Image 1 (cartoon, rainbow, N blue to C red):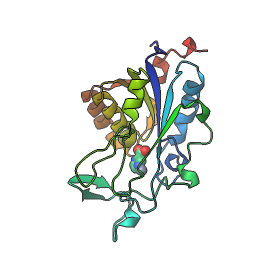
Image 2 (tube, helix red, strand yellow):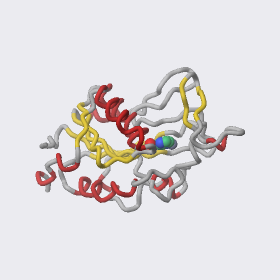
Image 3 (tube, protein in one colour):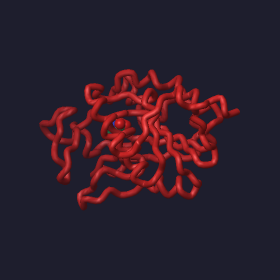
Length: 219
Ligand code: VGL
Ligand code: ZN
């Protein structure tokens, strides 16, 4: 697959130490995507690269530790929607919240931090999850891509079943031709992968693999 350098953007979702196998919200095999991600970032075929960074205050509503008597991975209802309660992760300013130190982030033109509102979670790079008023406020990322002339989005990162999925679904909803580089993602719960695959496809997201990209086209 040829990437049109004038219309494509690479979107790197939440590639942070806390989502690595040793991290506070460990994703099995999260570190296995790093070599491939580095290859794409340095291949020269994506002149425009953007990243998201999960970035929570310590009192964040998604942390089980902020709900008396709740344990991580329990689900509660929040503003009428299910909310998974997570272990504390990606706390602003902690090493686990950094962009992963082994990747060439100088290539990213824009880094969108998300999840900084203590009262709502934010899986997608485009919009927060619901706030108490039932809205999903924009991060401005869709407008950024539009002003940069982007039409095609290539999404990879962590986690496949949460932030990658929500980001890709919102990207498609915003009108971008959105592709997920499936083998450069990993799931919190791999047993749900079939459902993730079918929900992404139902949202109009195309699932591709690293080998589908023509990385020789770049410098
Ligand atoms: C994520 C759960 C909580 C993710 C972030 O990056 O997929 N998942 N915060
Ligand atoms: Zn988070």
